[in-house]
Image 1: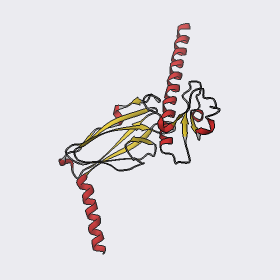
Image 2 (image 1 turned 120 degrees about the vertical axis):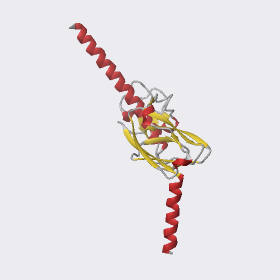
Image 3 (image 1 turned 90 degrees about the horizontal axis):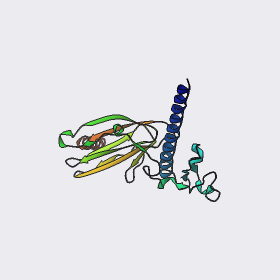
Image 4 (image 1 turned 90 degrees about the vertical axis):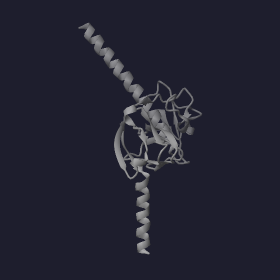
Length: 206
């Protein structure tokens, strides 16, 4: 009986530790995401203290108000945009949450949609290979997906010119819980054809 009690206590302790770790990771990712995408009048900072468990105490809105007092944070508060999802957040790689794309001429005119899930504290890395043909990718169905790509904003089209290979890292930027997103790959010919059709319609209208 004593062994069973000890076993249950160990399991509960492990589960609790895993929950705390998961909450830490996700709050850190959220702070990274929300500060990176905040307007110039808003700012968020992250407190890495082990003693602080509440999300509102870890990711501080307008954190400059707390710099002098540091609130409950014993360590330096770090600006959200400056957080490293690996070193600071300890994000977990989920290889099944991304897919690599290789664009080839025979794929021109195709459009493929796939849906993926990123759970608490997770990120994934994907390769977009446009060596042989232009590749175009969009992410949709969520506004909380962090995407490391220059100038990226929610649901922007990412166009990789022919001859280039791009590595993308994306992460769960939700305040809590998993996110589900849709990735759409579009062939260059199809997009060009759509533009040509629109131009033709405009010419007929005029």
